[in-house]
Amino acid sequence: MATYPFRQALGGAEMFHHGLMGTDGITPTLGGREFQQTIDEIDRLDLAALSLPAAPVAVAATPAPIAVATLTSPEPAAFSGPVAPPVVPIAAVLPVAAPAGVPAACVGLVFDFEQLWWFKILPQSSRWSYERMLRLWYAALSRLGCAVKVLRPDQAWPADIPMIVCPGLQMVDESIVEKMQAYAAGGGHLVLTCRTALMDKTGQFFEGPIAKPILPLIGGTIEAYDSLPEGMSAKVDLDGKEYEWGVWGDLLYNEEATRILAKYDDQFYEGAAAVIQHKVEVGVVTYCGVFGEEAFTNALAEKLAAQAKIPTTLLPSRVQILRRGPYRILLNYTTGSVEAPAPARTKFMVGTRKVEAAGVAVWKE
Image 1 (cartoon, rainbow, N blue to C red):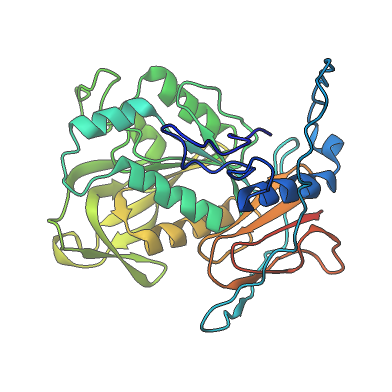
Image 2: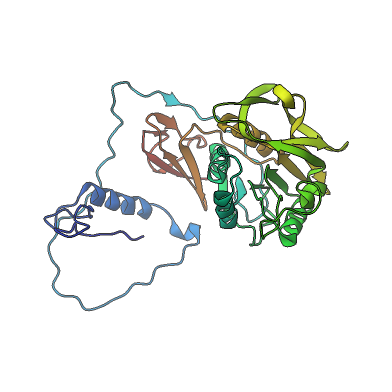
């Protein structure tokens, strides 16, 4: 763990960058006290359980030490505001055994800079945003308490991750499609979205039907696609509930053995498939042909995680749970209190079951 700077500069371009010590060089700043508090909290953890290598200790001759103030770790201040924030209960789902070597709720999310750059050059729709699509899926998975592992198209995908989401992987080559096929055929749940496999790696359309390389995987065809004007939206139905979309929508036709999970619910597209799901050997491929809003992405992610038997812990917005070895770390970025979904009689290493605004709790499972 490193930080910069130790003492705040008295002049120059970085003079307003606070350090661990203030402008007198010896008095700990707020950041300095928090830094010491972090060190104290880390000392309470068993680092060996995290399989972290021990840091080498360098010994060198030093001049006589300079007397400085000792950093102390104050008790974190309780949230104060005009209205006392309510405690938000977190609904936990009973855990399911995960594949060996993989965190119980690990999900892969594929990101590629080449896709990002191409979408910047030719977004096609003024509303299209590859970054936003990634954020929506990342947030939806994190909301379920999943540990999200970011993957690249050109790296090996762990076969024992139960679900991998590939948002907007528009440019593909044969090796990427083979990777998708192998992952799904081996028992994984592969999630593809609109604007997947439209082009080769040079940015040229494939000679053939739309998204030709993945049609055998998704178990359907894409007849057309559309994007609504700014400020307009339409409806898509998922499990009897309506959600908004407007950025992009594929007009899908499913094969006989392919399930329809969601349909367009109004306008020209009414009744057409929006999300389809196809079995590939012992695995599953879900194709989401619609770029929906946050509520839709959250609902679909929750449904697919349940199908993949991924243990989930439904979290309020802006609350995260991280998994580090045997430890669970809850980060509360909200302005209210939340309750940590730890088992009964859990001993908290840091914090308590009630986690205040901007607070943290660490416990062992």
